Image 1 (cartoon, rainbow over the protein chains, first blue to last red):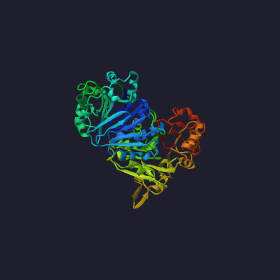
Image 2: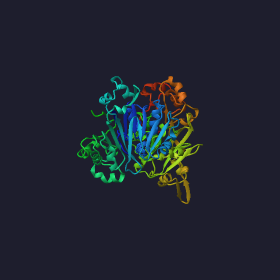
Image 3: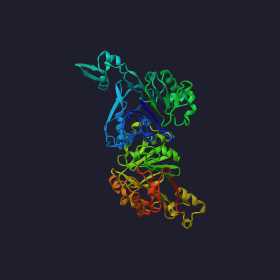
Image 4: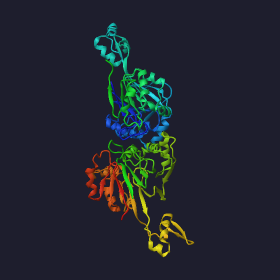
Length: 301
Length: 301
């Protein structure tokens, strides 16, 4: 199981009752933050998951509304007593951007590891596998999926067939390897195939695009931008490279996700709930996000 | 007359109910902002004075809690439709710092004029004369005064003595100069001496220091940091180069100001009002600042 929260749900600029779009995932007490606009640290204080165990901050892109809160966030993390290295992950250009911002904050109490994503590569943070595809925005921007893998079940029949005594079953599961009677056994010899894990996909800022369907495929949760609620704003969405509620819902439907949360609302969209049906008539299990909205996602069965 | 507002009153980090220390002055519809930490644009939205006429932003220093909201602020100002140049004013290093921050915001709709203050020089913004002295903090930091000067009264006796006809009195006052009957008259020939204007002094972050008394001398309002309410926190104030409430009150008393507003409270100071008497027993006309606190200051008489 893991916990997920929307730290903010606004696009463009922070509003008195809606901070900028940002998502937090908590797994085994460790935290991963996606995007960090101005005020994210304030909203995070309200959620109350703490700052010290933020091990990674992932960026979709470097428009101010997605990164302008980074310096304050790093100072808040330092103030919470962190000394461990922190991972910053994002498209190419990350180090240049962050070093510019850090001109107003010298002497952090921890190191920063910069991970600039260009080609497909295996990344993991807080125990989550991170995958990404380029989004379709006015600048280089990435959409992400965060996957918690789940090992197979212990297969007692396999263990019995190998003559491993019952009292050593827990040892091989925990240690992954067992020496017994001069033989060496590895965990894969006694485990069933990997089970379905938990996957969360996150997309903002972007027009709809095909690779997003693959990235979000069968996700437990898709958090997707819906800058505009009204279908009549299609031209604006095209022009500014954002999505309508209905377009996010089409992605959710095609990707076969379990649940869709809309986020990154235009400052002009004062009551996003009033346009929910534009999405839910296409993908019924849609929720309109709000700051502080959270959920625990469990493994199936 | 002018209006003044505390946009935020917090030190170190923005809190859910207390944004970072910042002050706004409004004169004839034009705005001058002092400091701009994370979230200042949000708090400013609540005050409702608008963004487009912010002609100048003045910085005390470049610790993150005094400038981390600048990029968002500039984008909000641009979004309000501003095309006129904006003045940024602060200690040396301003351009280097701001250019670093602007790596996440290209293409603003207006120019920036950088005014880096080193030696005494005449500066004016939105019609206010700006004076400054170096404060005593862990980095280079300035305290400011903002003065609205007030011309003398029109002196009818002088005008009569010069034989300027009554119907031309308003002309010479408005235009500052008048040609009549082949003679040239200037305004100073018919005006009384300059009257007392309005002065606001602003100090944060700093230990108390002598030059501050001169800077704030006879001010209508001193806005001064009071990081710690308790007198027992003197060692902490010394160590972190901040002030106690009582120290700010001593400055106010020695400078002979009319009114003192305390600001820049430590995040640990959850109820600053409860320590008001530590200041007011030294300087009775002390108010504990809060976000959105504002006042109109009128000329005397």
